[in-house]
Length: 255
Image (cartoon, rainbow, N blue to C red):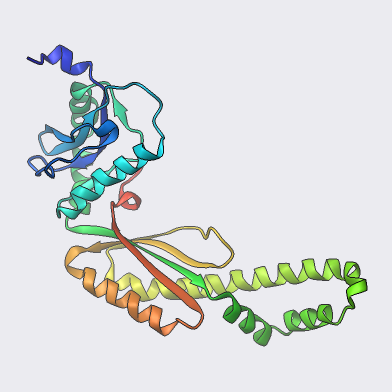
């Protein structure tokens, strides 16, 4: 028989927070293949599992297990406020007191905000050849410098080094201006079908937009249709990709 004292000694890996009484998907396991369960306190419940092996977390299998658990709850149609990878507390008692009881009001508000909604992510990437042609056609300075470099003989290529550097800078600046304009236009077109959005900084020069949208489940079809329409409209110069639904990390306030 497990006593309260021994229960406290088993560290708990916490995946996120949900409502009390939510059904845990049958056979769901997480980190270290430990069964997933709810630890409940009044209006909230932690999605958690034992962490009997004390070792550094961060292996690929740990990350996959973390995501698998959250996606299982999401697919079940319930609400879950996901935690970032690596949240561990001393035991079930610590989960109840230090996490759930100490943050009861705030956690309940977060769940209310997320209830009935999913996160969908939209990424847009330029078709580089098309956008470079645009830049050449619309910005004479770029076209002129490019033409001048092309006329340099092979045996004098070193002399054109600084011109090539300058051309690269001009193209990068042109893409940045276009990204600001095009990215904003895409966001404005999609925003009416979403509850909220978070725009992320571009990771690469060719990235137009990378944004997370909080979308009501009953408006998901409308949102996805808007993404398809935009993708078809801009297919000659921008490739749009829809990812999700995802655990709504981007809409859980930082502690």
